[in-house]
Length: 300
Ligand SMILES: C[S@@+](CC[C@H](N)C(=O)[O-])C[C@H]1O[C@@H](n2cnc3c(N)ncnc32)[C@H](O)[C@@H]1O
Image (cartoon, rainbow, N blue to C red; front, side, top):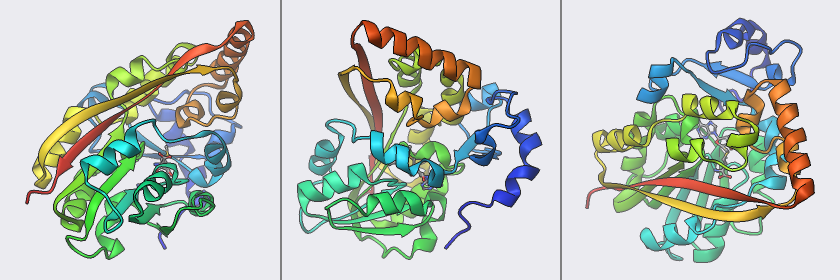
């Protein structure tokens, strides 16, 4: 099992955190010191390069409870993937960075496929194991996909949701995924596009620093499509899934169920929660929930 959370490293990296261009300067005495593991990101997107930002990872062992309580699948994504990749009871599917496995469990229940979930953080996998769906769960990282011992040409679908921004070298993951997919098999990388980040309601309005933080750590969609082509995939395309809902309760923001809320200054977080609470006292906010699925196939 790879090292999961090396607290000893964190103290030595405090200075690095302070220099983090996409991170607030005020981090002293802050819980985030125990959660942040800043990592230089040589393969970040062109947009991130322009801003000189770095990929930042969070310790999801610490976030598993809030995540399990508040996060749900993107509406429509699982149903689309089942149809697009032709997933059925004879299929093998893998979710890389499955976390609490909301999407994987829904896909398994919908199709009856054999479902494998991989994530670096055991606490996320513990929450994933509470689903009724039949899931095989293993620790591992996307960039080390080759070390998982997956049989070649064995998966009909490999997908990830809100994971790829934690991977410094998507190319290595994409190349390994290509080998593990059957000919014609589908790779889906659901992530935030620049437009989604800039127009997210209510996060972008009430916590405006999240926009730069998110732009800094997300790969541009065009970069992902180019990396997929370079890895040998064909038929690259994107598809946005969008839904709106009436937000009535501030709890998931107050409990930081969205990782970007761990990466903004305390003052902005507190004033954003207060402003959103006050706004919600007047009535519901029409919130949006979007993801951009970057899709490609292993050539036949
Ligand atoms: C925002 S959560 C998304 C979880 C899940 N995919 C979902 O949609 O609910 C990001 C997940 O990526 C995982 N992760 C972080 N770095 C990773 C890496 N290098 N390889 C694979 N997964 C990673 C985290 O542990 C976490 O569970």
